Amino acid sequence: MDIILRSLRLERGKTIKVIAINGSPRKKWNTATLLEKALEGAVSEGAETEMIHLYNLNFKGCISCFACKLKDGKSYGKCAMKDELTPVLEKLRDTDAVILGSPIYLGNCTGEMRSFMERYIFPYLVYSAKPQTLFPKNIPIGYIYTMNIKEDLFEAFGLRKVIELNEGLATRIFGYSESMYSTDTYQFDDYSKYVADKYDPAEKAKKREEVFPQDCEKAFEMGARFVKRQKALEVQNQSGKI
Ligand SMILES: Cc1cc2nc3c(=O)[nH]c(=O)nc-3n(C[C@H](O)[C@H](O)[C@H](O)COP(=O)(O)O)c2cc1C
Image 1 (cartoon, protein in one colour):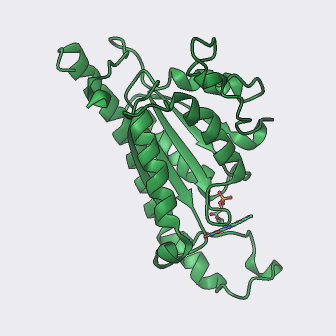
Image 2 (image 1 turned 180 degrees about the vertical axis):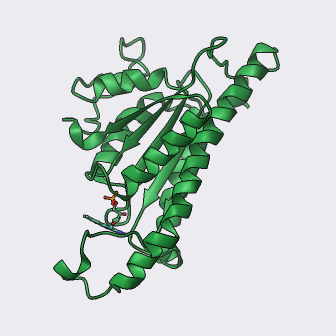
C-alpha cells in the first residue's frame, strides 16, 4: 500500500511533536480536558506538545477556490486561503501526530472543527481514479468526541457513520487514524440553573466522577501510543524496512 511505502521524514533523534486541536468553544471543559490528557500521554513518551484552540482564531472554511487542485499551481496540495488558520496549517505539515477534539453539535463535529477539517484535509486529497494523498508523511490522526447522548443512541443519531467517515478519510490521507468518545458528558456547571429536566443531575455527576476519569485515561493512552508508533516507524525507517 502506498501509505506504508510512503517515506518517513523523521530525522534521527528528532523530538516527536504532537498537536491537539480543540474544536470546542470551551477551553477547560470536557473536550479540552481530554485533549490535555492526550498531550500528557504524549509528553510521558518524550514528545513536545501544543494545544490550539480553534475558537481563538479568526478563520473560515473552504471557499471552493480549488487552488489546491490547480495543475502546476503554486498552491497545489496546499490551502491558498490566508487568515489566522494559515500558520496553523503550515505548522501541522511538520507535526508527527495530531489529535482533533470536538463536541458533537447537532449530530456532527462543531462548525469550527468542520471548517478546520475542510482546510486541513481537502488540499491533500487528489481527485484521481486511484486513491492518492499529497500528504508526505505517515502520521496518526486521533479523534476525540464528546457528547451528551449515551452510546446506545449512536445508531439513531447517525454518529457511528460520522466517526467512521472521519476516521476513514484521515487514514487515507495521513496513514493512520483512531477515534475515542466520551458520552453522557457533564454539560453545565450547575444543572439546577438550567431548563434541563430530561437529565438527573445526580446521575450526570456520578458519570463525571466515575466514568470521565476512565475516558481521560483512554485519551492519555492515545497520546502515548501515537508517540510510540512514530518512534517505531522511525526505527523501521532507519533500518531501511520502509
Ligand atoms: C449547540 C449544541 C449542540 C449540541 N448537540 C448535541 C448533539 O447533537 N448530540 C449530543 O450528544 N450532544 C450535543 N450537545 C452537547 C455537547 O456535545 C456536549 O455537552 C459536549 O460534551 C460539550 O463539549 P465541551 O464540554 O468540551 O464544550 C450540544 C451542545 C451544544 C452547545
